[in-house]
Image 1 (tube, rainbow, N blue to C red):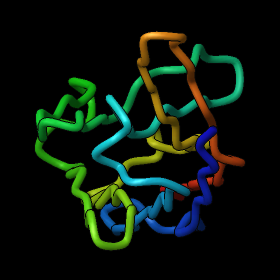
Image 2: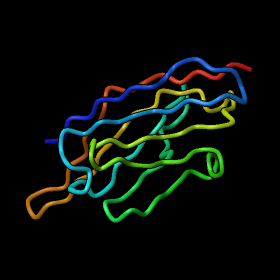
Image 3: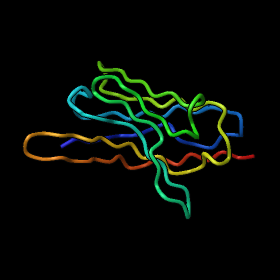
Length: 119
């Protein structure tokens, strides 16, 4: 089991920035991949950014160069720095953790946090 607690969403003007945090209940090195999905009203959920236990990072094309995912292993926390925000970044951002063991493959989710970017 992995519990995820998110923080950092809010309302910001276009061009502004926000930083999301996702605190995990266990070592992030024991989590195969951790990051964020987002879902805007009427749209499909999309992967925004993820980092693997080995440190590889992946980003949606729409956020490359603007968003950065990082981690603090001492705090078991992953961060998403979002710069130069655009109205199309408005969505509910949900932290996820993907774990793979011999017994099972599991996905865990945070409660979600709203990010609203005004034009």
